Structures are given as C-alpha cells and as structure tokens.
Image (cartoon, rainbow, N blue to C red; front, top):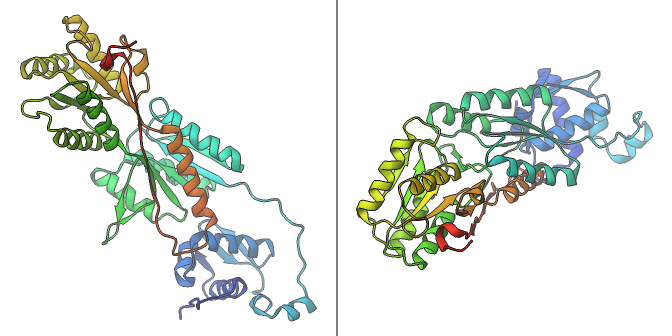
Length: 381
C-alpha cells in the first residue's frame, strides 16, 4: 500500500503519514519518503528534524527510523485534542548551521575567485563551506563528494564536475540522484530521457570569445585565429563564440589558424608555438585569441624571440585574465565573472534549500564576461 499526499495536505497530516510508513517498514530513506509523499527532499529532512526533536522518530544516515511508540494519533488530531494532553516539549533548539559541500577542479588557477564569491555569500547567511579539490578526474570528484555526504552532513552541493567520458556521464547521473540539492558551477548538464537540465551557474564563454573577435575586427584585423588547449572544458564554448563572430563579421576563415594544442607544460609546446606562428605568418593572420593566460604569455615571449612585434605584427587576446596583466606587453583579456559566479551559485542553492515546492523549475544562470583592453591589442600601455 502506498501512502500519497492529497492536494492541499497539511504539514501535520504529512508527518503522520511519514510515521505510519516508518511503523510499517522500520527504516525509510529520504528520497523514498519524498517520492511517496510528493514533496521535496528538503521538506522531508525538515519533517525528520522536527519529529526527531519530539522524540517520535530518530535520524539515520540517508533517512529515518521509528523511535519509541508511534504518535500518529497525536500528530493528526485536531488542535483542541492536542492541547488536552500536550506532549513534553524540549527547549527551542538553536537554528542548525547549514553546511555546503564544494568540489572544484583546481584550488590554484581560475577557481580561487569562484571560491571567494561562494564564501562571501555564505558568510552573509552564516553557512559553512566544506571545500575540496577534484583535479579534473571524475573518480576523484565522486570520492570527495561521497565522503562529504557520508561524513560531513552537507545540506547541498556546489560542484564543477567532469562531465565527459563514461566516468563523467556516470558522475552526472549520480549527482542527479543525490539526496541533497546540487548546483553545477561552470558546467551544464542534462539528464533523463527528456534531457532535463540540472541547476547551474555558468559564464557565457561563447559571448566572451565573440567580444574579443569584435574588438579585434574593430581595430582592422581581417584574420583572427584561435588557439585552445586540448582537454579544456571551456574550449568548445570559446571556439563556438569565435567562429560565430567571425562568420557574422565576414572575417576570413580560410587558412586562418584554428588549433587545439597541448598546454605550455607539455614537452611538445615549444614546437607547437613555432607551428602556430608559422601558420600566422603564412596565412597573413594578424590577431590571435588564446585560451588560456599561460599559453598566451608563452606565445608573446616566443614572438619576441622571433622578432615579431606584439601588437604591431600580431595582436594577442588571452582568455581567463588570471595573470594576463603581468605579461610584457600586458595582455588584453576576456575576464569571466568568477566571483559573481560563486555568489550566484550559492544564492541559487540557498533558494533551492529554502523552497519547499517540489515543482520548482530548474534554474540555469548565465553571466557575461568582460573584455579588459590592454597593450597587446591596442598598443596602449
């Protein structure tokens, strides 16, 4: 027999049904209660917390079990009857601190500003952040997230997961089935037969790349090349924006460099740099958009070694703006809104935690980057 919630069901009626289910089954998981009572997992957790504080049930990992004698009659009784024999009430408990788990690929590049945004928003609400680095490996990310759920008692997850490959796809499915709300940061994913979107906050990298192309085209460049690094999750979005802008502006794409390369730490990088510059010279390409900063800085250094002037012979725009300003000349760069991404991600997760509506639609937040113009494209210091 399945207990279902009728439209307009009162909280006390729902909690009475929870106790009845526990009386029949002994232990029930949060997601099972949420499905049978047609409410969100957050609502079930709050009900479990209340009933546990009243001594009616006890919490177990991932669900609840009956504790002592079921008091369904008391829960469902009219207000007048409850007042005749009120159960002993404990002293009001202090509000429990919300704990949020956060897993990002790197703690040293790009994500420190995202983390800062999350922590600033969390500090305003009194929430606690448990932070881990995943290292761009789906297996490591899943291990970190599982540990958080099992030992840290997190109420929600902010995560930048690996989404590609078999392990990445499995990780996305696992996140979708988690017992706590999940918001993706700088990643988007869909699940299920109808490709339902998971909640996410992302930079509009395609828009950022298009801004860079428009800037260079306004300076008179007719061939704007693109260099991205292999395995970068951002590269497909940057490439899409670059190509769309080039086509819209009728810029020449025939023989214009469009290369996905190793990164600047790879042994083949020096030879790759020479190949890039050879193609620029051969095709008459006068501007490059390079993702990311370390590769762009290394390219400028190689230009100087070969006698190519930046921006006189080759204008360069970097993507990320982590260390672009430290180059000589300082690099024009697209700056994703990293701090704002972190703030918006926490706000979205907090809104999900506070909303008891099981029909709340998934939210996808997209924030635009900025273009910071420096000497590598304009010639101005």
